[in-house]
Image (tube, rainbow, N blue to C red):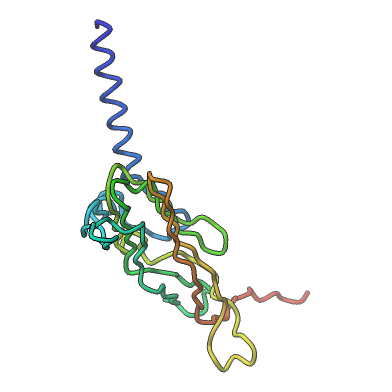
Length: 190
């Protein structure tokens, strides 16, 4: 193979690697998530055009903004101590002419998901990508237990764009309390 043939092969591999990184999703600790083919079908590069605003008489794209509804925390099965934090969707738009580099989800200072952009003006992540959600410990009842609430978790959704701008949604979500039931084997006295 001549030298220019190898260049084409390498260029093709770089393009494929870039596409893989662009659509790659690292969702650590996501319990029982959907298969990768389902994930790629739910991630859309351009669900809606970027927001616009007027500066003087000129219309320009607004600085990056993250749109995400408040998260929920659910306990599917009582007595397990397992709760799941979930968003119905996450969305971010870059300011023009920038593009989205990445969007991350952090819960209590721990990176739980990383989404990479690939020369796209906006990114939309359907909540179904995370399966049941991000698994956390529900926690014991707070105080006298009358509220039914357990642990509270701080979250941060951070987006970066090629122009150097960043946007973040920070907040907290409280999970329902849960007491784990442990069945110990009976020990016979000798």
